[in-house]
Image 1 (cartoon, rainbow, N blue to C red):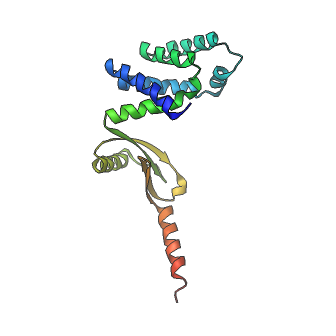
Image 2: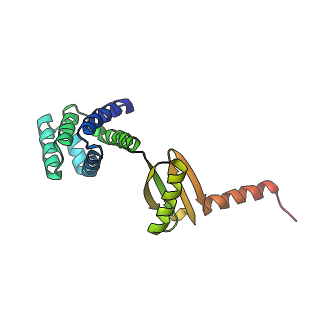
Image 3: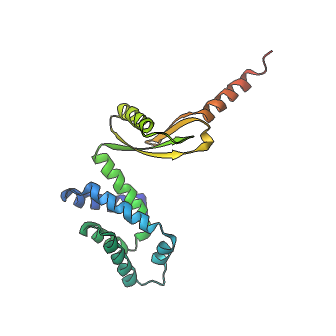
Amino acid sequence: MTGGLAKRYARALADVAREEDRLEAVATELAGVAGWLADRELSEALASPALTLENRKALVAQMTEALGLSELTRNFLGLVTERHRLDHFEAMRNAYTDIVDRELGRLRAILRSAQPLSEAQQQEVATALEAQHGKKILLSVEVDPALVAGITVEIEGKTYDGSARTQLAHAARTMSRQGPTG
């Protein structure tokens, strides 16, 4: 499936969710479905050509009922299943999340640090990013010991690198260009 097709599905879902004032609620439900579909055995079963369309639809219907999804999300997943596009669900969900974030004035950022950061430190970074970008920042936090110290932030396709690893590499390049001193 092309990104364009995933975006069309996402836009159609967003149009209906907006009318029902459920943009964010549907995004939360789609995240739950993504977690369910991340199960390797289940995703392999759903992709198996041995599973008839009717059985695939029944399995998805059981899952949506077990997750307590809204009628809108259940209908969307039924349509995606019927059109044999369930294997492209993640692209649709990502496109939908982008639409919701844009409409709600939010940006997603990934904060990586060498050591775990306190809530206050995380909030400090989020506040600085919000001031810089003029939007609410939704921060995902990851620990990456390879950074040595410091942090990196990925936002809108850009990486802001304040890690010791990068600073040390920069210092090494500078010293190698200057040659031996003595």
